[in-house]
Length: 300
Image 1 (cartoon, rainbow, N blue to C red):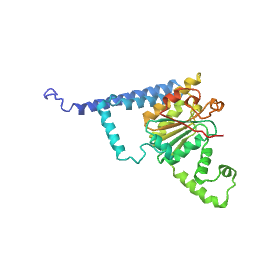
Image 2 (image 1 turned 30 degrees about the vertical axis):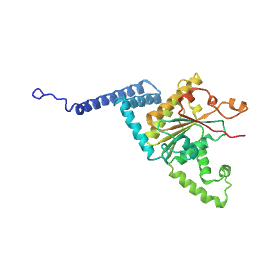
Image 3 (image 1 turned 135 degrees about the vertical axis):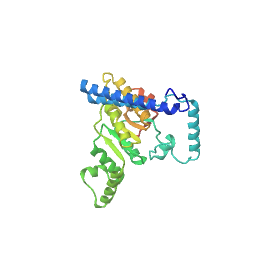
Image 4 (image 1 turned 90 degrees about the vertical axis):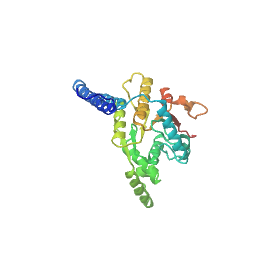
């Protein structure tokens, strides 16, 4: 080393190895910390949740966290040029409902979408229709319905046979071909379900698994008010934490997350029963965090 003249010509090349070594040390440190948590704490899910957050933070900060306006300007120009040459195509993930897609231009990466309505308005059915129509791998975190309930509803939607007829077994001979064709379509769908997540840390874990392991490009959470967080003493604060968590997950993993939400009963007491933002139950933070709020409504 002493016999060579120092030069900065290859500084970026050498600095890359220093940065990689730094990231490796941070990962190792996080793994040792996880080991300590496992020995010291009985709540393994909390430990894993914190470990995942640390790893995600390491990944996100392994490069420069500062972005210049120059880079943003270049990306915006590329986007506008691309959209100019693809005017007739939806940019985001399509819902399959033409009028809705014309308004939203499809669901965008990082979007947090609230799908709200009173019980019985068809939130779950609409969300499954979107999953069926979108044409990309999808994840569904269901806190309300079982796999059989979702399966029967999906089958009825695809084959056109009344759901009560399917449940009770009153099926005409001519309907069996439609049913078997619908089951084949269901089996080919790249849709993955979680039925065991209840708390925020479980939701985070399952969203990560759906995106990273199963390649999900859109997530549905059915429904938001059934999730429980650590801050369970104040329900309004709890819903706010859940809302922030879901928006953060959408941004971190660059997928649209559609969260179904119940509306409060005030909407039924008004003369005009069409929902407004204030009807979202238990927290005003939902309307603040959401990129899109969609209400389902039909006359009695």
